[in-house]
Amino acid sequence: MERSHSVVMGYLLWIFGFMGAHRFYYGRPITGTIWFFTLGLFFIGWIIDLFLIPAMNDDADRRYFEGDVDYNIAWILLTFLGAFGVHRFYMGKLFTGLVYLLTVGLFGLGILYDYWTLNEQIDEINE
Image (cartoon, rainbow, N blue to C red):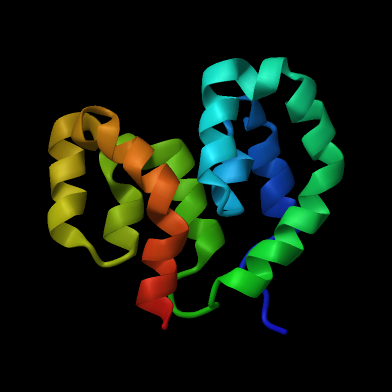
């Protein structure tokens, strides 16, 4: 089976897990949002996730298609450079990348939208 997601990437994003980054990465936007607003469910959920990442990774590998756009690269770009739209340029979305660049990630709301939908956006491109 081809792997769309990486355990190593999950743990890297887990470092920022109190913001929910690893949960968004694995296609769990609702709990990612809860982690975001509660600092990883008051850091308790964040610690528990240390042990749950391998199972979340396997689930994501079954749900999303591997293809030309690499999930790991896109998620690194979103997490660290999302305000500049670099992840959108990487996916070939030049117009919205430019909009993000000029509006600081569409005033932050676009970044949150991409946290919720990036896996599906990549999945659609890779099909």
